[in-house]
Image 1 (cartoon, rainbow, N blue to C red):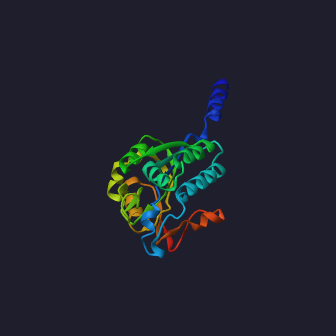
Image 2: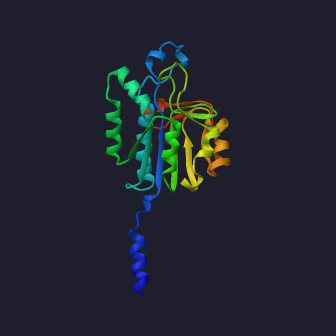
Image 3: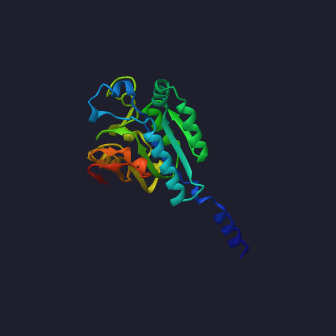
Length: 223
């Protein structure tokens, strides 16, 4: 009886939220490049599309899972350095403040390889969300920062094999909130990592953030 009591005491005191929630956040394009594009092809009028979507998702996780949920926020630093310089604002400081407010572990990265390494250091990932630019083949952490309409930092679907499959819990809930991911990358994610990556067939629209909602979609979600 005493052994059973000790077991229950230890089991019940173990933090069920020790399992990890991961949010990967890409960077915004520079306005000096986007303003050269035709109106309907311009991106990132607001610098914080992906940041605000990330913090909304954090709040949702804490409400749905546990207020003490363990969240790791992996953010592409270089994009916010460049956009901050362009806009004259301390975006790195503001992002760090948002992470601290939600007690999220903030991990700055400057490349796709660094983002993969950050994921591989974790265990028992039960949710994964990506907010950023993407196409059907890759997460584009950078898009239009140094060169107009060009990505210089990404995670391509062929690089998913570099991610440790055991980092993810069985039946982990994963979603890409970038454009077109469901058209190819989602299937490769499933084959490579074993979990379903919900992705968009079509474009995603971040204007829904102004109504307090996560991005909407022009097409449909693909599992």
